[in-house]
Structure formats: C-alpha cells, structure tokens
Length: 197
Image 1: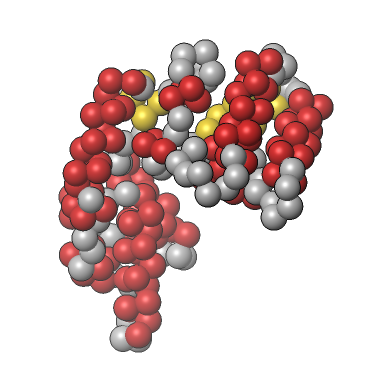
Image 2 (image 1 turned 30 degrees about the vertical axis):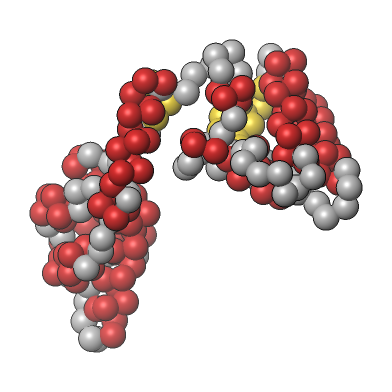
C-alpha cells in the first residue's frame, strides 16, 4: 500500500480509496500488507487538508484493531516524528523494529550487490577498504557512490575501479554527518521504543 496515493482531490475520495484498499486486503487474506513510508499517508502534522488525514488515520486504526487474522501488517517509516502516538501504541503492530545504518559487514555486502548489478566482479575491488571508507553511509548512499563511480569512469573512458568508488565516497557527505543531530535523536527514540533489527 502506497499511502501517498490514497489522497484524492474530491471530498470523500481519499476515504473511499482507503476503504477499497482495506477491503481488498481483507479479501486476499492470508496476505502480507506492506506499507512503505507510512508517515507519508498517516502522519497528522497539519490542518491544511480539511481533516482528511485524521479521518484516514481513524479508519486505519479501526481496521488495525479488527483486521482478519490472515493479514500480517508490515510498515516502514523514515520519519517517526510525524507519526501519531496512537498508531505506535502496543497492540497496533506486533513489534516495532529499528534498522540502523549498515555496519561494516553489511556495507561490504551492499557494495558487492551494487558492483555486481553494474556488471562488474566484486572480487576485483577492495571491498574492505571501501566498506571502511563508507562508515556512516546508508545503503542508498553506497549505491549512489557506485553509480557515480561508473559515470566518472565512463566519462574518462576507463573501466570502473576501486579508486573511482573511493573518490565518490570521499566527495559524499552522508546524511549521518549532514544531519547527525536528527540521526542521534532517531537512535535515542529507537533505543527506548523498538527492537533492534
């Protein structure tokens, strides 16, 4: 379910879309319902939508309480600050997990995947040094470094090598640095309220 696609321009359209989506999920049970970036559709941060967000949230909370046993609900969020507390209370979700930035072993694996996806052999790269260089990077930032390195190598009519990726990483300020206060606050929030993934 993509929550941002629930919103319509006509009165009542958003609520109808959610009701249809939830009816479809119920009919498909047993099913896993994946809600990507739940905060985009169920955050209640403003009054500028005429109360649509609050009504959608109310409908969704009622459905969560009464959903069939065959519906396993999974949701992701990048910004938990905008999520209403009633959505996160115990009993709404079976568990809330926190996925932190990748550790060194995970960064090596991410590098290997993205190098392979670009038709290169990861064994030809020093994944250990690149993983160390990418401390604090998200998976998306690691991918962007590999893609940028590929473009850089192509522009120079060269094959992508370790140095191209290293240069891209050195030129990148990861969000963990640029927004370190927010990352620290998120980690603190997670430490008190979630299970480490």
